[in-house]
Length: 332
Image 1 (cartoon, rainbow, N blue to C red):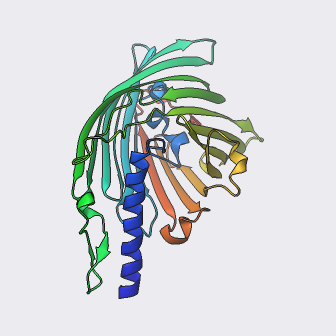
Image 2 (image 1 turned 45 degrees about the vertical axis):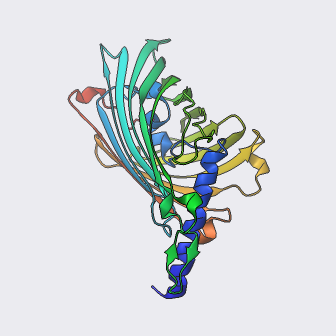
């Protein structure tokens, strides 16, 4: 890599790390892990989803956030299943989210009680509990360059770090049938104080996040089905919106897209000019048990000019120990 290109990359990583630190100190930024394929991995945003697919289901997901920037990625794994004649769902999720100098690792268990409100519709009430480990070393922040063009940190302000265990609990509701769903959740209710080494007066904390999600399926004949959905993510004074549209072809291949935008003070999602990102989505039902998903995020804001695209891959396996329980396709 040419020296000029290296310096550009180093300067951008410095800005990213400082921006990340600022985001924690100002408290109100979005802190939850972001997924473009949340509609295929809803246990990550709502504990009431546990067991809703009626079989033992495992999902692995990897997200490369901003292809041109190092140390910006997410890996997650979820597993859930129904028990007690499908009146209860249990699940487990683990993830590791890295951005700049910060790494956030989480492990959560979910429990959902499911009630039939009609022959085809189920209301699920869920709770989850677990812990996050937030780690960051401020010594990795580049504050200057030596004569050889190598980044260094010679600012004592950035000499500390953080290694904090943050226990938390969350709740959710999920109403669904084979044609649609609506859900509401708050995955982290406890607003833990995040102390920073060397900064005892820090008031940084985890902010409480709320999620509203909904989607439905419209049949377009024997071979096609249209699936619109949306997700709203909100904190006390910020909100983000995802609008999605997927077209299923012969119940085996789904192609679609999303539009994502962020707004403060709960303003209309359409007030943010062109939005923050557009997303291309592809989902393939390889067999009755294997499902593969891929998304490609193209940034519309100023960050996209430097950061590059975002890639996300998902693989799901559903055990067929009761083959009659696997419905093809399972849209939700």
